[in-house]
Picture 1 (tube, one colour):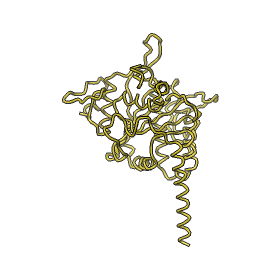
Picture 2 (picture 1 turned 60 degrees about the vertical axis):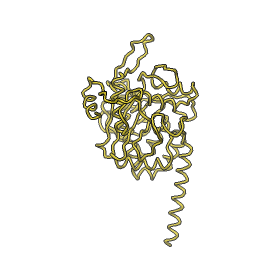
Picture 3 (picture 1 turned 45 degrees about the vertical axis):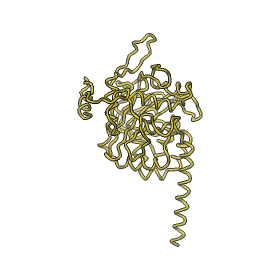
Picture 4 (picture 1 turned 135 degrees about the vertical axis):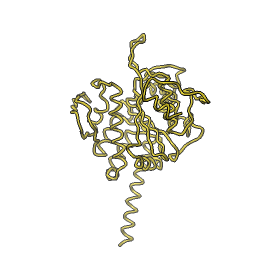
Length: 336
């Protein structure tokens, strides 16, 4: 009888492993750059400090070729130190787009120019973020609207703390949010992370809500209860999510995140200004080179990489430039 139960358990485990491999293979999409970032001397593993770029796109259909990043988030993880830093990049950030001979515009145009240059939309977005901050992007996860909704629903929703009352129209239907703790399904979670016009902090406020939801999702995905709903999660992965992580890396990531204490997770913000002072009157989020440099070396320190200038040169004995931002002044002291 014991042998029979063992055979049944092994059969069930084999079925789930097959399903997991199948879904991962369907959603796996390697970057058009080889096995490592150009900002790395050699390929790393998840035993080393590494980065993941999370991209939420503005399309609903997984088959659509053209899309724009609606959310860009860089997560830097140091497994040995059990620390994680999360940086949200506003989609209106003005920066040089990779593979355009120096063209500067909103960072969410990087995918479009990736199509034009035949580099690929996600690869070009990755390279643009790498150049903005002079950091390597080792892994990425890209999810569209439907994938986000299905993933949140698959884990049973997310818990958030709504900062103020607001409403917004999503898919031709009004969504209403009341200040205070709330449990959101996939559709309402999407509305929660997309709204910015009613937020006094504009994109920065939206970025905070996005980080809140992503962390809630990550907490759910590392719990046993989420494994019990693996069918729903796998269906979401295969249809609407792409990534460049092997199955063993996915499993390693889950274990790493589970071991990081909540007080070891730090959120970073890009200090900049909204401005339309240009001939066409287009609104951009302007970030100074000084701010980019400070953030670059905060993340590089997290990755145990040496401090560098934005163009990849060693600082040598040169000090990091001063900042008027008190928080950056403290971070500058830590770096040096």
